[in-house]
Image (cartoon, rainbow, N blue to C red):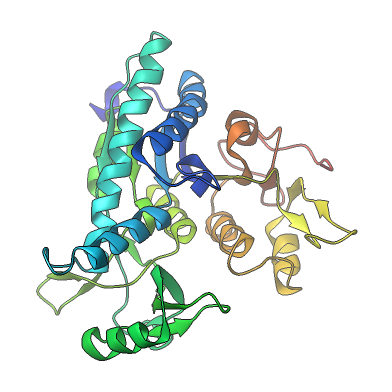
Length: 335
């Protein structure tokens, strides 16, 4: 029962793509599971410290592979819509994480239950993103095949930097986490919850009767993690990826990393154009949204240093000024 458990800080951890698939890998089950096992070791360290965890993750390469399988087998098996492919991969990657977390905990003599919630995320039917599809998904095509797919299936196709044509879909804003009550109940029972994988399955209301329908779109996974953290009232949001910290003037001789930073200062850097839209931009925006909505602290840092990022010893720490909340303030420092 919820009242019988001591209060523990609740963290939402947003895992980057390197948690599941490393650059240069083909994406076999064995490769992905080996990466997930290494990730699980990092997460179990946090559980040993007494944190309650909600884990989100990316699924872009996995959805891309399912879409490719769709195309290859289209003459034999009817292709599934994009929103269904997202649900499939939530289940697959959740299974990997559940098993790896349980095994890692058992090796340390811990009792752990993890559960995956295939999560629907509500979006506005009139979100401006539906008029401006921008998120590439699936395989590359030549121009003739792209024209055929546009004519026969109504796909929006776009040429991608000379590499071929790809389907592009909308990326609407996440409004609400449909399965939030279930996630709350699982957390109260001490379950590690894996939710909103890949940004969740985008759904929209059909009318005033409460019915929902899937939408062929992709919600940014970091923005969905921020929405989940805000709705849960989490004590911290931590985006764990393949970089040590957020950097200014990335890729130039002036590059320097940010340690502790206030939301106002980070917004200023964002306005100055320091963070690319396709990489660090959404992570910074997600962290800012969480802290500006009253969250105690957000962090962005390396997955292999997860414990240090959560404890404020590594990564970029976004903390209100003056710092407040259930997590300790992070001393100012330069990385």
